[in-house]
Length: 554
Image 1 (cartoon, rainbow, N blue to C red):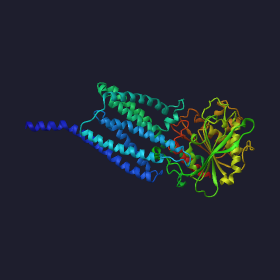
Image 2: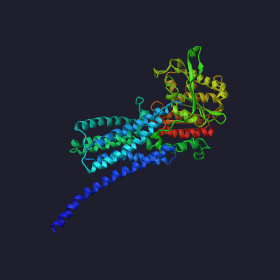
Image 3: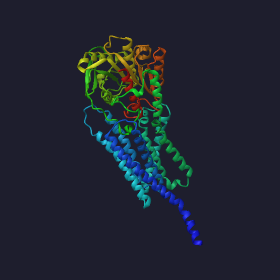
Image 4: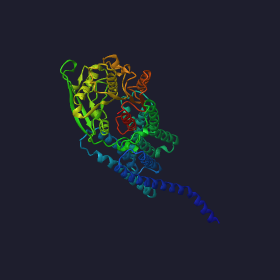
């Protein structure tokens, strides 16, 4: 009787431990199963690369896999070599994928690159590495754990404390709108990559500090809550995507009466406003034709003496009839910037693949700005230009297009104009000046503006920068009329250079002139330049609506 009682007591004592062992076994087996399934789906996705909404299920599974594999390290008694390597290499590889995507998106057509092979291989390597890691963790749970040296553990601890302090700073840039030295675009658009970094850093700090923090449970809780909060904040831009889509649908349906998202059908269109796998793997650049650095104006007198203005052109490989035109104007405070890789290059190839003739142009950079001058801009595009001069240069390009319309096979009666920041302002000023007949001798009358697409337009910026010009070109809202072209604007709510109120004011000015064909898509947490990561949540969403807007008025 006594031995039976002792046996029962012993069984009850061991029961919680047995449950814990069973749960840990299930946890790592579940990660192995999930990773294996994800690996197979990855191979299918890479074979049939598209933006079908169904792939977002795969994207969510990928997120769950990464988060589970990171958090699972908390179940270890101490950091092992395996878990340490995983927590260091996994975030590094994901960020590397993002950086390589950015590099790939800025390549000119025809440039050879190994990146289309390297990026998918790295993505598959993440799955294979996670699968091996989960298997090793399951094995280590049953046997002896090879811990890391104490000195390395302390180095990791304090190094990751520094990483989390950086995370506090980047978190503040996501949550609050304040002048941040231009770092905002590099944080908000890539925040999902950073979320994994800060999640892994939190786990490394908690595990690396176990020995001396165990007597201080309150401090451990503070570190845990603080670290996980930092990681969560970096997920917020992703979580805001449904909000962006809902308000975008309301905006476009209100502004463009014939809008029907379900009615747009094209194999080249994005099938969903946001594809999570595309965020990680990028959107492959389209295979199009193009010419680089084509001269359209050489100045010989006055303020134009000695300047050379050039453009890049992009065309679909298969042309059917005359091509509608998209003119893109780069930003840079009217004094800096350039076409090409400084102007979201992949936007050019993307719309060329949809059947547009895309022209990415220079317009002459002013030396009269108080915003400062960059040293990496050719002297032959600089001069003491006013805003009028820059708009006039854009007008000279329209005359060039008219002269070469037959050569390029252009339908100038269907022209769209787009630009970001200072380029958004110049696109707005040029489009409205053409529509309203202002300075008509500057522009070719063969071009008909069907749509205006400004990104975070700095419509009140020239005056603030001390750049001279006509009042209505400095502040182009004054040119708005009932006949102004349909306009689709993009603006981040956390833009510290050009407040989103500028876009709101532009739409209100349209309404005041009985013109309701203006819509603004606001990007929560979005900063100035929130389109530079082409496959980011902001740019994907805006491109989805931009391509449909252009198809509507094409």
